[in-house]
Image 1 (tube, rainbow, N blue to C red):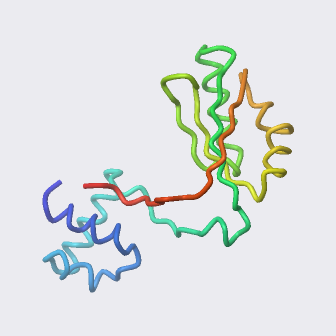
Image 2 (cartoon, rainbow, N blue to C red; image 1 turned 90 degrees about the vertical axis):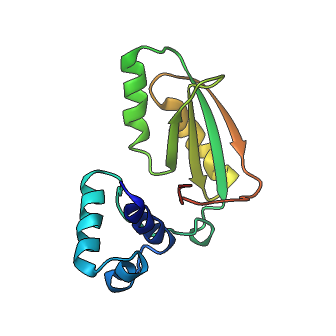
Image 3 (cartoon, helix red, strand yellow; image 1 turned 120 degrees about the vertical axis):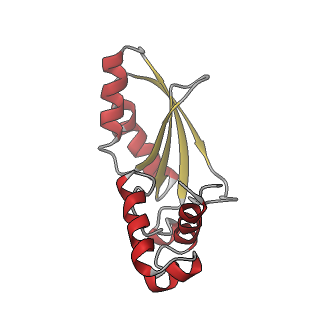
Length: 150
């Protein structure tokens, strides 16, 4: 990856909808070489895909929960079962395997604390291998970006 690739990535990150006709001259290329570089970056996995960023609050998802999960066991089949199950829950928008006091940290969006409590009782606590769950609620979002620092 060279400086031109990095310029392409920065521009796409700033404005994913930027037409190729505007992107190419902005990074110092004509359209065909720019398009080829983008395809190469996609094929190599540097560009994972393109998404639309939605406002959770505008959709009624006003509660941001960080659930710290401790497992009953660290056996491979328990870890794999939990990770597969998490992928089936659309409420869980992020899941990280952690070091430290918890085994996993989940970020969950919910319309209310009451809704989260029902979700916790009915589904979250029944995930495979869960020994305990410690939930923290975000008071406000100070920074929310997917832009990578390069």
